[in-house]
Image (cartoon, rainbow, N blue to C red):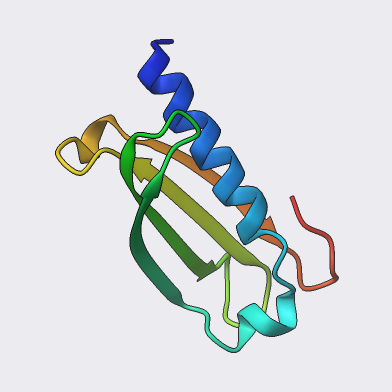
Length: 92
C-alpha cells in the first residue's frame, strides 16, 4: 500500500469506529440515511468522508454502516469500510 492508501485507510477505520458507537435505537430512527462532509486524515490531508446507514436485509433489522474516505478529486481511489449495528445490540 502507498502512504496515501494507508492514510485513507486509517481515516476510514477511525470514522467507522465512530459510526459504530451509535446504538441501534438511535440509528433506526434515521435509517436509511447518509451524509458527506469534509475533514482531515491522520496525516492532515483534506478529504471527504461519506457515512451511510442502510437496512441490512429488511427495515427494522440490522443496520449496515458504510464509510468512504477519499480525496475530493479522486473518489474512485477512496477507501471503503463496512460494519453493522445489530438489532440485538452487538456491533461489528
